[in-house]
Picture 1: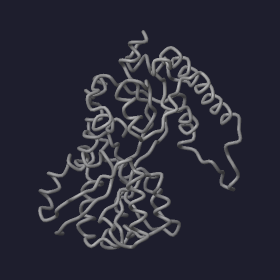
Picture 2: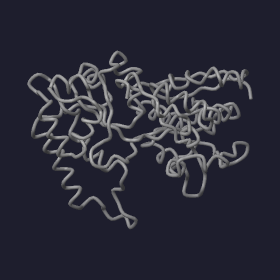
Picture 3: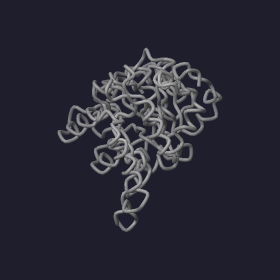
Length: 335
């Protein structure tokens, strides 16, 4: 394959691409890769892609799609079926996390986006803020303190100082969202599935956090929130592990050593986020686009180079065999 390809995505993905681009260029010297990284996280890229699909023109050769949008774009169409010739992506199915693969499948059995990363849920915390509050900041102690939502709230009361713009969490509405991140709002018969005691308890936790003044009532993914995180005005944030890459690359690049990361309270085995790559039917260079996707998404080398660079945890299971997943991370205080 030869020629130019254009990728649309969002911040941190450019650093992910740069991590493996030298190896890609060695294997595909006649492909020139360019990208546009939209601000505002995935929302601006999503809106640009939706507009271009509706217009039927001005589309990239590869579109990054975030997990919250993949069903929308899969149903909307406008992307090639990667199970067909010449892509034959089905040969990789068993190498990927099953639920991730299925998320990009259509009801009639087409694969319209290729899996990239998954997002094991993580609680990021400011070590320096914990220490200033007289609390232990090592991950083992913090994980124990925050192992339940009761402990989370109790610790937050010791740390937060709203009168001095120090908050425990960005927004209390994150708590029920966290709980339902890996659950369905409806059962198989489309009955509402959240009317139960556990949901009520989670909502009460969120209300308690708000009533105690522990949250900043912040809007996420805007500059004010980024600044509060970097300035140590928000002590904890719950997100996918990919958020570590955002901290390192553009939210708080000077914050090495100030941050730690532990499992989320009570139900740590959750997924939060993750992305896909898709080739629009309007692409003028599908062959080169597929070469890029295949190299970046389905090789251990590229996947692990991206993980080291921006903490994008591979959905590609063979990458997990690398011992680097046991290495310490300087940014997170050597964890």
